[in-house]
Length: 550
Image (cartoon, rainbow, N blue to C red):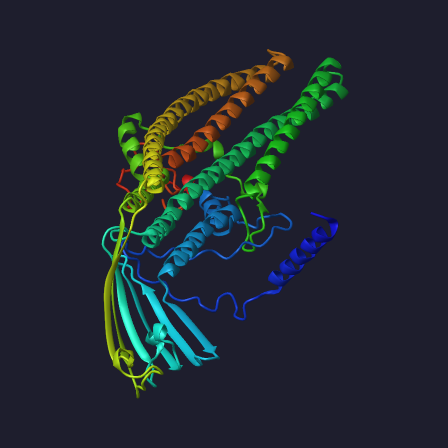
């Protein structure tokens, strides 16, 4: 190809692209939006819950104006109403609904119209208008229309001649083999309906994960606040003692060694307090991702909204004997397993369609037409070429690709995909059982650690009380007293850490069982032995009434 022909080809391509880009429909894109048709095989899924308003873009964080402790109920309610990622996953329902509506559009009635005018020896004009509607049962297609043909027609086109009022016609096409039980239209609609139902497990799994993360962030923040109080009290104790020691030093009752030792202790404890303060701030910022205001902006909870007596919380003990009931409940509730049931149904639809496409195409059709108005003779005269007033037609068509490789390949693919899905479902069930067992094990051992930590705290306090009396009677040194104070503080810190880990394990346990924390009385703490396992779709388990877990 020479340069001139190459340049000409590029010029034509650019002009064609510009012309295609400038073509736009005269109607708005939603001009033909209508109410969806009734599905052929599957009852319409229940209407989705109303979606929350789109969250506003976060601007700046602020402390939450609360009168009293921030509860887990507040956090989970905020997540349900304003968490952006939960709103994003809720759009899966709207996406699936749009895809289902698109699939229903395959059964729309199609209007076709055509007009032509011919000049010459056989001067004539023709108008043809018709509608075609595919039905949602049996693969049947109906059609009806009207046409008008006037002028001179050759003998071989004599059927185009109509009476002055035109010709009305109607007919039906019925498949007998391929496309009878199912066809690509109905299979696509069925798959879209299943996909719409699949949105619920997707949203449910996302909601469980978000609720677990929010609850764990809440308890980490509470534990960090309690640890800061322990560190602050320890630093305050050393600072108060420093004032007494300084007075005694001025009176020359003690040497310089004791004030120096205590000042070192004050500095060390203040440094530990700053580290604990950093942990509180970090946990509060993490919690602000889930705690949001009416406009969707993150809220950093203030320190005065922490539970004041966190160390005094007494959560209910787990009951490992409920393990089998927990496993049964998890298998009934977990949205992943519900998703597998719907996925298997969708694969079965694809297999049914592929199997049906292996059959030959055998369609029967019938139609009738009726002229209206005055009928004139054709140009060729009378006889068999006069205008027919009434006509009827019936027939059949047959078609089959002899190797049928396309249909056989689709069947093989659908069977392999269904077998693959069954294997994945089996592993998912095993994984759910393992997760429940692990969650119960975590609860049991963490609760045992909490009990041992409380025992240590009680004994450490006894030792500290004894050592404090001995120090006041000058029977022991400040060094020994500091050791016991630090040991008692460390024991309290371990209680706080164990309590926070146990409450976070409760949130993980709820997610493993597939329990909606918001539905259980506003984020109740549900433990083994305190919940009644109900089958899928039953009422949610009741939560303990203790205000600690609300």
